[in-house]
Length: 138
View 1: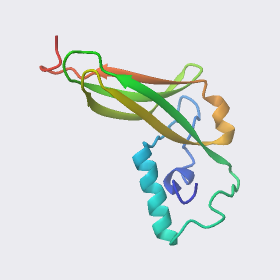
View 2: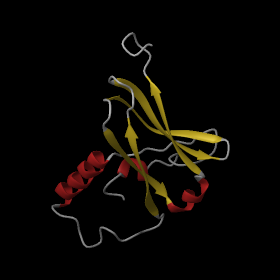
View 3: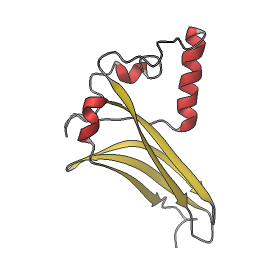
View 4: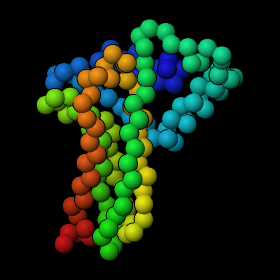
């Protein structure tokens, strides 16, 4: 994890820390692949110790969904993945995407997380809201 997400591993405020300071980050498959490639380039290759865990222990929480746009025309949406813990709702990753009619869109996000915080997440929610503009207005 130290090679793949050093910015997160070294951030003492990262994680589900309560209402005053929770923040998480997620990576798409492409972003994750880029991080692995960059780590390989830095080291020349991933060492045999690549998967050895050293405290603190980190893991990946994966979220996946399949989106299907049922409108008769393309619609642009704000898509936000939230992690929830009790009444706490933390945005993890947001994007704006145009979805076209009758097409499936796989959605996947991987969230690096300290293992001792994994139990704090009680739910993951994907919020999909149309962008309000002249083209998308009814």
